[in-house]
Amino acid sequence: MTAQAGKDVLIKVDTDGIGTFVTLGGVRSKSISLNSETVDITNGDSTNQWRELLANAGVRSASISGSGVFTDSATEEDVRGYFMAGSVDNYQVIIPDFGTFQGPFQITSLEYSGEYNGEAAYSVTFESGGELTWTAAI
Image (cartoon, rainbow, N blue to C red; front, side, top):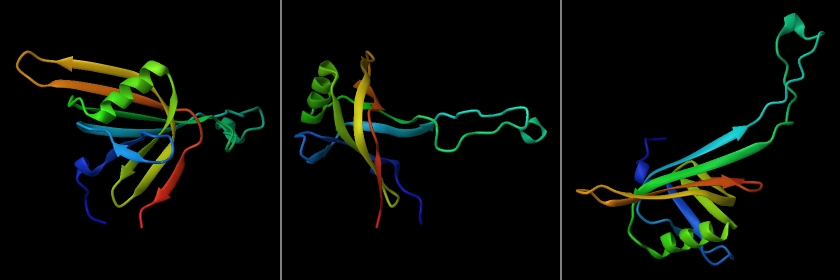
């Protein structure tokens, strides 16, 4: 596998609720963070008092974040609406030549900014609200 351009990592939103995914416009920086809590089951019988963890017991979650240039695109309007509604909607994060994460997320942060001599920008954070699926790239 060769290196991939960061611009090819995409955040997509299901804009009609039936699986029509549209790329979130203007995003320059994107990331997805996968998290898993641990459940510590260490006890007096643990070998040499090393911590022991209970497999598959912790809560799993994911966070998506992105920031970029505000373009006032239709998908940015959708994201504003989803944030204001507090809804949990379907999103995808596509990682080229690797695969796609897809599932329900809620927008937990939406920020707009602008410098006097620069572009208007925005940043957005999504938190998972259910099970994610993973589809490997072919």
